[in-house]
Amino acid sequence: MAKGRPVPVALGYAVYSSNSGHDASANPGNPAAFALNAEARKNFSYAALKKTRDAALFLIEKRYGRAPKWRYVIGGSSGGREALAVAQKWPEDFDGVVAMYPAFAAASLDLQFGRITRALALPGAYLNQAKRKVLFDAAMQACDGLDGLVDGIVSNQAACNAKFHPETATLAGQPIRCVDGKDTADTCLSDAQLAAVKVINTPAVFRFQSGRGERSYPGFNIYGSDFGNPGNNPAEVNAIFLGLGSQVPVSSPMPQPSYGPDSGVPYEAAFWDQWTRYFVTGDPNFNSMTVDPENPGRWTHKILALMAEQDVVDPDLARFAAHGGKLIVEHGTADPLVSTRATDAYVAKVRSRMGRRTAAFMRYYQVPGQSHGSNPAFNPAWDSLTALDNWVSGGTPPVNLTVMDMTGVPGRTRPMCGYPAWPRYNGSGAPNLAASFTCSTR
Image 1 (cartoon, rainbow, N blue to C red):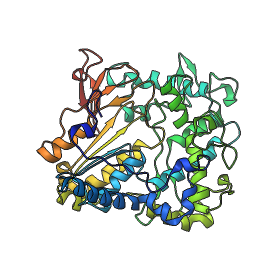
Image 2: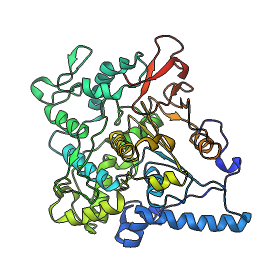
Image 3: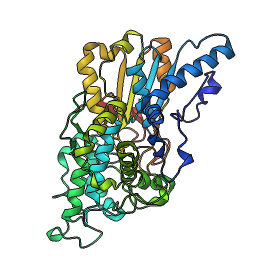
Image 4: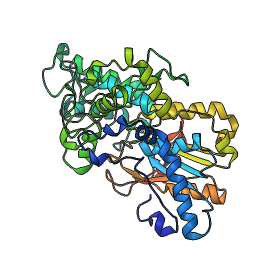
């Protein structure tokens, strides 16, 4: 929601939420233990969405004597996956959907988490926070100005990904690769660490094919993204927690509690460990490091079943569109936990499948600098509910949307550009105002 805007209940909405059918706080050390119960796992994957929606509408009708005129769902991360799930699985149940940084290909993402975890656990491969800052600063030095303004945000992420190569990059005139590739100081990256960076930047490629033809999960925009740099303000603490943490992932089970900031292991490592033990193998004592995510051997059949259950990847939204449904998708380019490139690929499939009809019901905005939650550089807020309601109830598609920074430079604004456009500085005008930028694809 936008800063200063009343919460939905204060605006007259009836609001409900769900815990997906389980209480993770009941077992903080092993929050995925619920998946040992097949029904609880299915509820988490998708089934709770329909059950909760139907129960909520029943109560609303009993209380107010009529059904709501419009029905909306808004969610981020796993909630973003759930938002896309209802549009795909129950297209007549909701009139408007906002899916933010959606972890829609959940099982495929978990496999990428495993690939990255194993890479970081190799001897000498883990990047401590100082080394992450070297990589971050070098990427910012090379890429920050690609949008015409040095402002701490990489807006032209595609150009940065093509231009920046850490093996040959420099920072303040000095190579960031350590001399002879050996780990000599915190001011450079060894060859083992550069190899780990390459894994994060590249896709997991599976030696099997899901029922929908999925064979990979993209890499992450690591160049210019905060994967947990040094710092102790709350936004940086969150970036460390959701990024690479502070401890090498070398054992299973991971340190307890698996998801608390005090565990220290990278978030994706804890996630992979929990998913492998409780979703895949059903063995709480299983060593997750022994499974190759790209070639899982005897676990392939179970993983395929989980992909069918958890990956919400159907690009055919014809029934949702025919119902009059409207979909807004939003994802930050600096997300260390859910790959922006995965969302790009899904939107491309929807556009290919739906053709010219797409613009009538879907918008996709990629927000430069936005992480998965808050980070010190840029933490945007925007009024998604109003944008959605204006489109659904008033027939007015989103236009001239802006985001406001809440942490880096509080109050500065940027335009929300429909992907693949990004905000380019006009060369003049106040650098902290959205009006000084134009959405560009060049």
